[in-house]
Length: 103
Image (cartoon, rainbow, N blue to C red; front, side):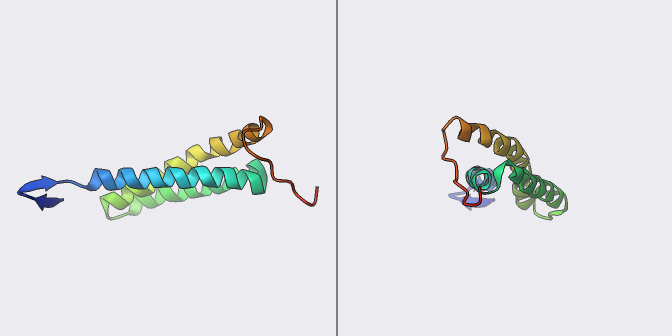
């Protein structure tokens, strides 16, 4: 909390909101990239990051850090569904399919 012109301003919500916004963008990009390069089996990565994020949030001493870690965990758990659905988006032609040389 900071004091500007004798008004207490709580910046915590803005910090968490900005962090969640950035994490969603990163997770979405990873979903597209991961499915393209590793197929939908990339969901295991999302599961691992999600579990690590949620468990880490339980042990964080700072409330802001705990909130961001928890949000990261749950965003990546949701990313499991998105990674699997990404395969369907590629089939519909919404995203380009990577041509693998060994196929």
